[in-house]
Image (tube, rainbow, N blue to C red; front, side):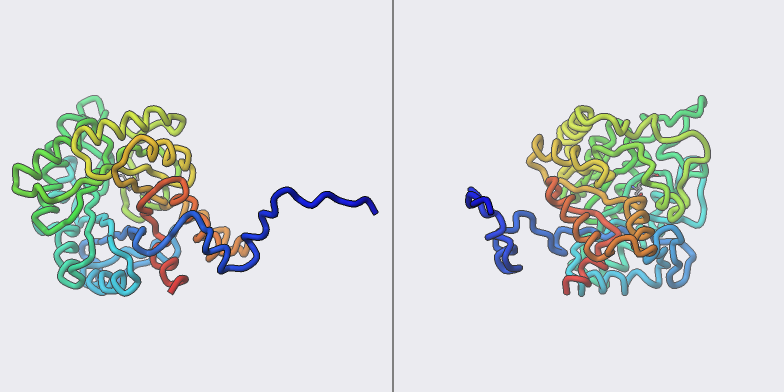
Length: 327
Ligand code: PB1
């Protein structure tokens, strides 16, 4: 038997028990880091399952108050709201109606759980007949500058409903400045902006587009969302939105973009959110449904990875199940 040298470092000393492992754990994940996205559908009663997102539902306005209370019981501090209107048009005008579906949901959720932070997604894709995130120019492209005042109008209508944070997901140039100016001019200096600053033209949004009925009727979003190959440009987008007045910034999607999260973390001190999107959620659900992975462990590992990459806030459809698994 050859005499073996003792290992120079015994890393396993700090893995001997869960107590020691917890003592030296580097990345913390708690419900307070999570934001739960929800879909509110005008005219719907109760809740309707979303086929490509098992466990997720479209909610009617009659269901949002209980949802707000449940989030409070689970310790989840914030909700990100998406609307499915009864009518759509070329301009997306349902988006800025004072009693629009999201505006009403905000009033009801705040009434049911005043501590819940409501984050209003600002974009036209759920409200336009063509499904693009802005209004169209005659050549069929998205008209950036004609879209800005409409986004600003939507933001003000959400603030008037009591929305705490405005989250523009449209990717138009100059939208943060336009929304900041409109909010301030309307007396909403205290309403923050969480900008979807680095949002990529991703294949991982498919299930969301089914849930929100928001797929573009033609073409795609590559003329305004970022190329997945670019990380330097993501930094430029973030720094631009910070300069325009964003209070928080976001990288989206999350798991396929952990390097981007890390790069952005190293360039800004602002709170950084990452959106664990519908396609990431659907993939994990599908593998777990087939018994190929341990769902609870995979969810925890995925959310921990997003936090480890540098996100302060994780927007995720797994929020409630993860919080329940920890309670
Ligand atoms: O969960 C998701 O896939 C989020 C999708 C995201 C919502 N902000 C966008 C998806 C898309 O580009 O269609 C919506 C854009 N306003």
